[in-house]
Length: 119
Image 1: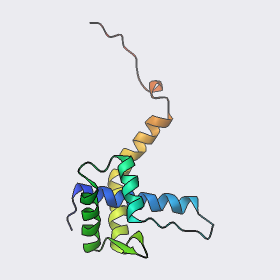
Image 2: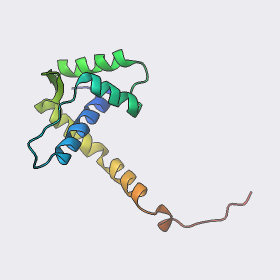
Image 3: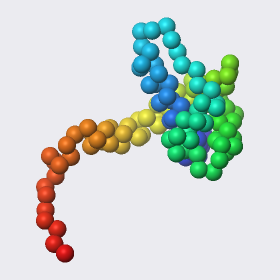
């Protein structure tokens, strides 16, 4: 099943949102419900929306049509197929995310050799 880069990014973002909510609410009888409007707001803040909100709604509808996400009781959810595709995405971008985290958290100058730059 071919997904556009935008659809993959939406699927990844939605999966990460629920993964983070599950982590925060672990051991508590709570679960998160994310509406399309709230997801659009998150996408806007993250810089995902460049063409317009309608294009993002259309991508969400396409993902629903491909049975990767569902929109029930006014909340977006990953379906079983969506979860599998999300896990595949995590495996493919995981090394990039991890190296970004290490660089952000570590003193990168510790690993580098400094040189004088002559003009």
